Length: 363
Image 1 (cartoon, one colour):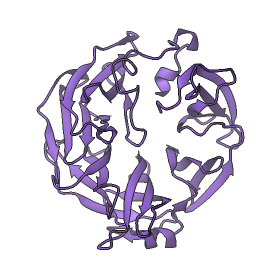
Image 2 (cartoon, one colour):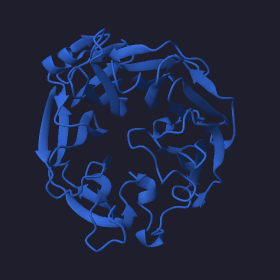
Image 3 (tube, one colour):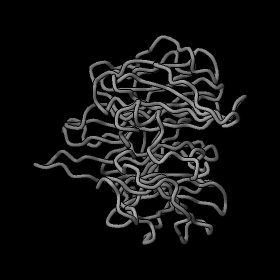
Image 4 (cartoon, helix red, strand yellow):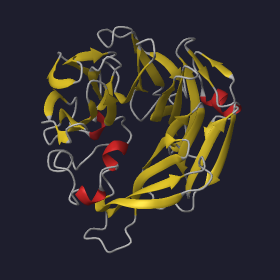
């Protein structure tokens, strides 16, 4: 999104891209599924995008930054169900193969036949188990070439923990799922929703921001937590650095200062974990030295989802929707804006508007 957003705003179509509006389900897809766009610089400099079309088929296209052209969209697979929960995640491995993961039941995994070529795809593989409603897929790769696939093992109700499946052959085969966070084992009391997952090559750990839906009462309650997964040791780590063992629980996360004000987007800079969260106002947090430091962002407006991107030491950015300053044709429309910090997140200001009068629901 960042690379495409940096195009000259004057050249951006005000009605939106033909690939994500006229051809897809109301534009982009459920915001809880990531990633929908990934940038890969290999033999070609490209951004790859996946979405569901009107027939709920999984589509893939890419933007070639060298030629400034879009590739013709390619049908990759059919979605498991006609529901936004089947929204696909896209991933490009270090060899250049493009992968998609869509889930609602068994996870459907597709891989391109050749690196950096989306024209032909291998037969769809299923990541088990088949008897669970798997959702919210987040694929990552370690420097050793192992693929890690994080997801919710179950539906919204009852007990649905955070799990990971691992593949040492770039997705040809997958190990059985391993439960990493279990909010209510044998109690039917909690389900997880992954908000963000980022691999940090400096520490060799995966940083996770997750929502907990506490189902133990008459009405569900929502809480947010931060934790880390160490693939080498196959163990969980709390915000304060405590070893939580092979599986973390609600109690061990809370006891080790891992609860967040709210869930949100995450980025890592030189080993420093940065969080963009929203409670009553937008909050910028930094996890460093086993502690979370937060500051409010009064200059960042709007309640729609926003994305944090750290472009460099003196160029930290927030992309997101905010209410328009001028009358809009429809009440759900607003402006896609860019906020910037040049002092490592201490202060933020709105730099400019990228697109005016766009539908804020397409986040």
